[in-house]
Length: 414
Ligand code: SF4
Image (cartoon, rainbow, N blue to C red; front, side, top):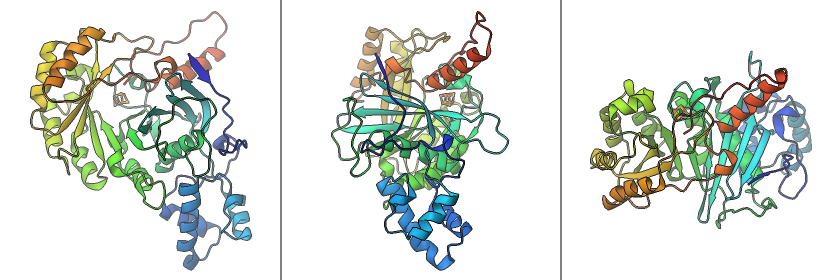
């Protein structure tokens, strides 16, 4: 069952708020770094000697309180608030659709403001996955993806562009708005599961649309903002970057960003991984695992997560399970077995439950606890790329005369 919500955001007190990009054409300050905020202040005539203090004020209002109106910035002079509002907004990405699963998983299809010569406003997806003791936000780093992992729905969507840092941070702000995760705000009234924690978003995973290491600088800048202790304050140990295996950038990410790391492994042999995760042809498994062994800060307390999607008859044999355990020997690792979430047009099917259990048993006996990830949000197409394809399909069908077939979505899902 799917609960499709009214997409008019509230400020947590039930007061409807504007939802960003579609409603104003003014550039948004929400998601900007301190340097960019200082530049924005300079552009409206704030003297240089005041900028640092003003940036600190804006920072706190934007990233600690989550305000969406300059009027709420009570310690900023009325005159400056008026000048800010005349030129800028605090818009978040526009919500195209919001779906809430029976298990509390929330998925947003978001539209970003057009940049440069873009004809269409790009769309991305963000997913929130609550558990009793944590809330994980899965965010996108690119619009579409250049890679073509054959089991991944996003892999069927061509890359439109890299996301800017503020567009990555904007996903966090939007999610906090929608689940009432600002001081004094109230959670949504739909009664769906939220974690029993002070903060409702405790973890961030860069596992949505796109390959984050192909947008390393912008993703790094965004995570600087997310981890800033005077703002959003998400610990780097609770931020995980997931890569398909861009080997040359893995070490740099570890050194410069210092977050946790996940690898989309999905196969234990190069011939199969070449098909499932084609970047493997450039950076085969042995090179990938060598980069993992050298990941800065790797220890038993800071393990790498290896993601392994369970594909029926493809990668799910007992021999595969044993090979997986052998392959990862000596690397402080967690293993996530992910039951495949099929999407329309895919050639793959999810492994049978008994097969998953037998595979998990081998992994378990090798000392990896709870390796099977519970499927979440299956009723709302929570696999990455699915909402966007559905949206594109609907728009295409609107343009076609009735009776003409819908374009297919092609293969894919991560
Ligand atoms: S799994 Fe990740 S890297 Fe591969 S196609 Fe999908 S979004 Fe791109």
